[in-house]
Amino acid sequence: MELDFERCYRAVDSRDQRFDGWFYTGVTSTGIYCRPSCPAMTPKRQNVRFFPSAAAAQGAGLRACRRCRPDAAPGSPQWDVRADVVGRAVRLIADGVVDRDGVPGLATRLGYTERHLHRMLRAELGAGPLALARAQRAQTARTLIETTGLGMAEIAFAAGFGSVRQFNDTVREVFGTAPSELRVARGGRPVAGGAGTITLRLAYRPPLHAAALLDFLALRALPGVEEVRDGTYRRGLRLPHGAAEVALTPAAGHVSATLRLADMRDLAPAVARCRRLLDLDADPQAIDETLAADPALAAVVAAEPGIRLPRAVDGFEAALRAVVGQQVSVRSARTTLTRLLTAAPVPQPPVDHEVDGGMELQDPGQAHDRPGLRGFLRAEEVAGLPDSAFGMPAGRRETVRALAAAVASGEIDLDPGGDREEVVRRLTAVPGIGPWTAGYVAMRALGDPDVLLPTDLAVRRGAAALGLPTDPKTLDTHAERWRPWRSYAVIRLWRAA
Image (cartoon, rainbow, N blue to C red; front, side, top):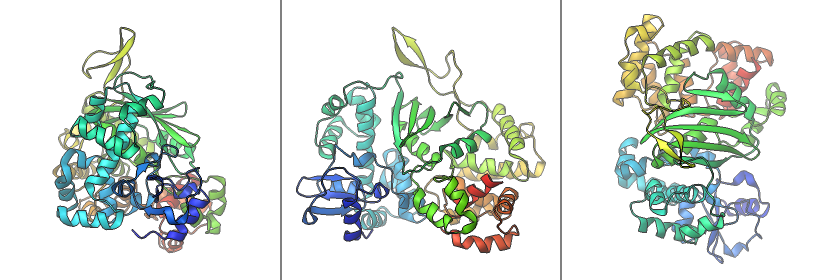
């Protein structure tokens, strides 16, 4: 990734927060790396180097600045939306694939050799997959040190380190201090909430139109899986090592996330899913500037800046919602999906209960006072449901089964590292899935920022309300000026409708 020195230095000199996560500033005279917005004195030009990733800065022997905490900045929107191999690899690493399956597993998922994958990542990010995963483990460890009462050995393995010694060495190298000193620096008081419960702040680039996100999620919330209440979105998750429950509350400058995890190793993938769901790595100013250049959208962009693209914590869930929602209302789709959920019980998340004045984890199967929110169905579970569970026409039922079978077998990859073009091609090969459904899945499951749904009834109603063409072909032509952010235009048209 080429970084223009003059442009980067101007961003650092102005402390422009918009560039946080896009690149990192290394200061050779102090041996630290910072966010572009770091409030410290601007370093001299001859002492500055710029890096495309935190891992690259760490690889150059620099440690994270304790003042601006560059390791906790929002991720680069470039890697969040790019559909190429490097972008897909970054999303999979954030989801913990390297920690679980190693570099061979990552390479297999992407269809490349380890050597070629390493070469591509080094060229673009200045670091290989192991270094990128190591940087993420360091940030996960810091979060656990500062927000929980877990012992250091427990944190080491929960963060994905192979040994306590590796954990200690990495924390000292990345943060320039011992793990125990990080906890002391934060007051040594872990956030209350019980064993297995973590509360942390998810940063984002302002502005964030939180009400639009919560409205979208509330309208589609499935009983027992998710709910929106008192400005907080709660839902159950099914993560690689167990069940979980998350509560997300938008606040000024961050989203407060409280996660109750059955297995602490799931912290990093849980955070990645939450960030993906709320589209927290987007660059709203760049998106809004492009859309506002169209006079038809200028007023709604000015009235509601920072509209995000609500994504999904599970690709199969988004795809199933799309198929079930074909040619029916959102309310009718919710009813059908609720029927599916009740037909296939899934494990409950862990629940806390009081013991000796403290809190400890209770086994999911034991009795408890408050029922938890459960995760959505897996593809193999849906494929095995009886006909009576579906409550839809036979043709659509078979489409759902075919989709579930294809996802369960790995034929269709709806994970964040899936190849968007290949996914769309394979989806449309399933009988009953057309361009609208495939586009909806690409937009919400894979985070494609440039999907237009010109035949969608609500999109056409929104277009009419804003004085835009309603004929699908004409609207498609008009929307060329919205590239590469047509998915965000779709969200605005839905709101206008």
